[in-house]
Length: 150
Ligand code: THU
Image (cartoon, rainbow, N blue to C red):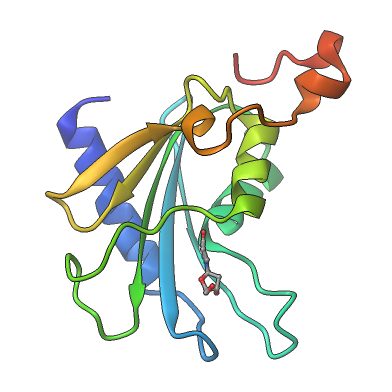
């Protein structure tokens, strides 16, 4: 992916982060998920008084996309920081284990790119396989059906 596209995706993640609903943790996350055909779906984290219904930004983006019929994905940009903290002050916000598993369902672990950004200039790109080695997927339990996002 070229630099311009990466920066565009990071800035969409920051746009999504503005909608984070975080009255409990005050930790605000934004994600921008790029499909294979170039559409971007934004997601933010949405917390809940009962805690466990909380949904991470990454899963919000995936579920929005999948519910719109998308099944093939190229990359996701993720930004996260405490409320009030400025971009660049914190560390990278890596996806939680549950979100990595959701990515595993729809993405090729060797190809899917996860862009972790501190700001528009500082980012690192890792593959899903690097974040979730030996991940369990549709391929593992139904090898003949594992044609998703190859
Ligand atoms: N969170 C995300 O949205 N994505 C992650 O990958 C890590 C955690 C959210 C969940 C919760 O609303 C807050 O960050 C603190 O855990």
